[in-house]
Image 1 (cartoon, rainbow, N blue to C red):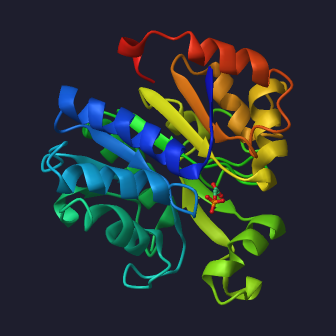
Image 2: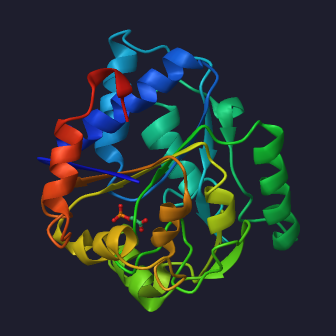
Length: 261
Ligand code: PGA
């Protein structure tokens, strides 16, 4: 597990976008797993800037969704499908054909979950999965005590996550759906490269538990410790509870340039 401490959200976004651009150079039709929420915005902005200036060619890129609210139609502006269309597909000039996601409106939700796992496998698996982290240590919508071997399935959000996400629903926690479909922790671990990006002091405790705590379902993000290629990019504030921050800084400063993330 590599921990990279950056000055701020913007430089972190730039660094992660560079890693995505380098993946696309190597593999133009890469399957990029995207996360929603506020944190990844600087990554998508930096990637779109590269695409606009011709520094990366995203026309064959494919995008996979991490999680989705149950019961929000795709046209609802806060459905994650709509968020991804707005923040990722449109800025990169991609259309819906480039997009894979679970159906949060399906009549048979468990079948929709299994179908999504099958679709990811049929697409060759996720090359690079971007992740955020919840203040409670969730990745995707795998809330604490999610099985570390879990597959895509329905989960119930905690009060804390619904409170955290109320800002997207006119600050009304009751309007945040209770149920979601999320790639399981086991599904996420199948991606070839995991990049977790976290910014702000509110994430410091969860980041420290994920990076330095025991591997435990109590902090689903700690499952990244089991992955052979996991990168944690954090700003100074999100790194502030790490006891080994100095070591992480030294290791990154001594890293050869050619290695990338
Ligand atoms: P945030 O969400 O980026 O909006 O903080 C992260 C998450 O819940 O995974």
